[in-house]
Image (cartoon, rainbow, N blue to C red; front, side, top):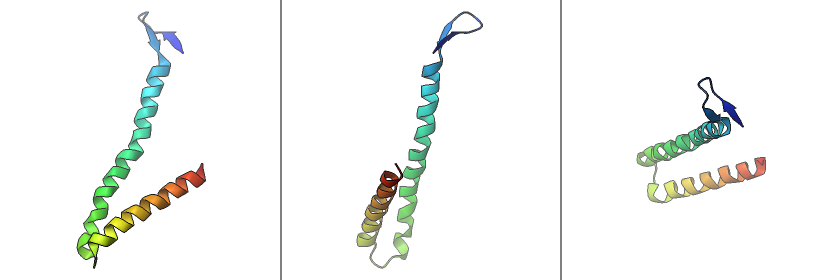
Length: 72
């Protein structure tokens, strides 16, 4: 949709709305990438961190992916 602003310039409201939608959709990925950093802090408390952290990251990602696919 296009409109005319107060000073006579034509503005594209759809482009502005799209930029806002992209910014809003990126907030979830920012929080999830921060969580990957926090997961590895538990390595000092595990008996076999080399094996268990990799498995927990893999299965955690797999479970979340399955939940997202089933929710669609």
